[in-house]
Amino acid sequence: MRRRMIVGNWKMHGLRRDLQEIDQVAAYAENRCPAIDVALCVPATLIGEAVRTVAGRPLVMGGQVCHPQDSGAHTGDISAAMLADLGARLVIVGHSERRLAHGETSEVVLRQAMAALRHGLLPIICVGESDAQRRAGGYLAVISEQVAQSIPREFGENAFAIAYEPVWAIGTGQVATPSQIAEVHGHIRSLLHEIGGDAGAMTPILYGGSVSPANAGSIFDVPDVDGALVGGASLKAASFTAISEVALERAT
Ligand code: PGA
Image (cartoon, rainbow, N blue to C red; front, side):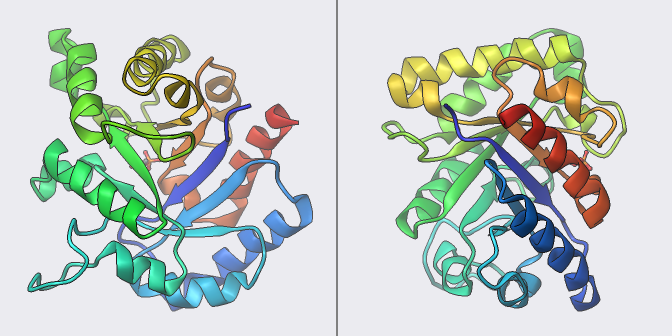
């Protein structure tokens, strides 16, 4: 059985008063003892307090990016060592908002993922095509290139997870259809298998882009969907735990 994961991405949202949402998600995770990994990637400013809020309950805290180096003269950046030091256990790398707004190439994303691995963090490596790339028809080639260049050459089981996030589906309410998701997830699965053999067959592939409690069921029913990376709907405990519950129903 592949690991199933529901990961929230708070992006640049969240002040200390929002720790109560994290507390509610942690209470849910404790009650349901989910057979899936439930995680929240909050702003780095909140990770330390969030880890204390969660206090031993089965909710994993993560970061949203890390620098490829462990330390150095990089004003404003945060290293994987620092995230791990706060108690984070995973980190998103290669999110399209970082690739586009910060010019992070797949080569940089790979170095970020390697930094995460050095510090015991699970990297969630994001890939996804733009609207223009989908319309032009070459989107599977775009995905192939991003996957091949962003993931380690050699890897073991559960070394990382991939998130397929079509850029046009992020924050737009325009979720990809089950057949669009099935096509790309199947493609990523065969690439992972080619590169990593058995470990590639066991690597979780998450879908991200406008996931909500209403559409989660039809997404999780798609073959090779092992969970979700959730943006907007992760900000409130009610919607995030509702999505987790849909995943949990399918995992048990
Ligand atoms: P969304 O964001 O769920 O708000 O579309 C997903 C993401 O960017 O990870």
